[in-house]
Length: 394
Image (cartoon, rainbow, N blue to C red; front, side):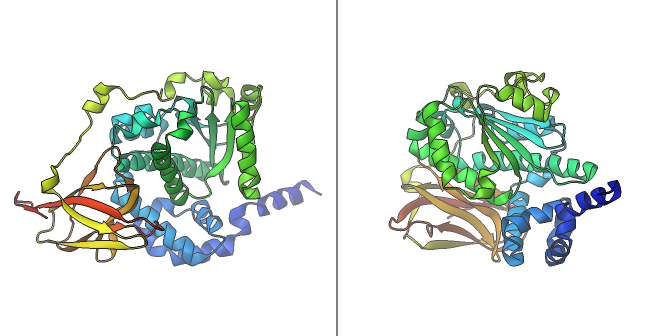
C-alpha cells in the first residue's frame, strides 16, 4: 500500500469519520441541549453517548440530558476545571473529606490520555461515611470526573483523535474491611454506578497492580462474567508493573510510587478521617418531634408539594431514612432542579438547599421503586426562606 493510501486508511478508522452520519443525526437531536452546554458539542463527546447506548438516539439523548442537567444543578459547570491543580482544589472545596479519598488525577500521558490513580488499600470506608453526607461524596466524585473529561476534551481538540482515561488501581495494603463494611461499600458502589452513567465510554485502560493472590483470583473470576469490550480494557499487571507503566505512559507523567518522576504529593493520602476534620464539617440535627413521617412502599414513590411564593427563595431539606437507601430529588414542573441521588442516611442525615429561580409548586420526591420487598420510613422537614428572610416550615 502506498504511503498516501495507508494515511487515508488510518484516517478512515477515526471513529468520528466512521460514524460521521450517526454523530450528525445525534447532534441535531440534542441541539437545544448543546446550545445550553456548548462544551459537550464535540464529535467525540457525542460519540461516547452513542457508543454507551448502542446508537439508540432516544436513550442516549435522554441520559445525556439528565447527566448534563444534573451537573448544572449541583454547580459543576460554575467551577474552574481547566487544570489538574484547579480540579484538585475544586474537589477539596466540596468537602474536606476529599483529602481522605486516596489517589487522584496525575495529568495527561504522552498520548494525551488522562491518568488517574486509586490507591484502594488506603481507603477507610467506615471512617469516610461517618464524616459526611452521601450527596457530598457523589458531588465530589462528579466534579473529579467532569474535570477529567474537561482535560480529555481539550487534548482531543489539540490532537484530533479520541482519547480517554487511564486508571491505575493499586491494591497494596488491601484490607478485607473494604468488603465486609457492607453499608459503606454499598455507598461506594452506588457512586461508581452514578459515575458510569454520567460519564460513559471514558475509560481507555484500567490497570490493577499489587493485587494479593486471593484478590487476584477473585478479579479473574469477575472478568469471566464481564462483556468482552469491558474485559479488553482491564489488565492485571505483575511485579514489573512500574516498568510497563513507564514504557507506555512516560515516567514524566507518573508519580514516583509508580516508577515515574512526579511527586507523590500529587496523590491524596487516604487513611482515617481525623476527628478534628469531622468536627469542622457542617452537620444538621432535628429532634424527632420536629420531623414529619412518611412511609414509602417498595416499587413506589411519594411526591410532597410545596408552594414557593417568591423567586429567589431558599428551599431547604433534611431527612433520615429508616433503613437502606432512598432515591431523592427536587422537581419543578416535571424537571429535576436537584438531581435524583440514591441516599443512605445510616451514618449521616441528608440535608441540602437550592435557590428557587422561579415561584410556583416544587416537589420533594422520595422514590423506593428500586426496592423489591421493603418499605422505607422517611422522617423529614422542609423549610422555605423567602428573600425577605420570612421562614415557612413544613
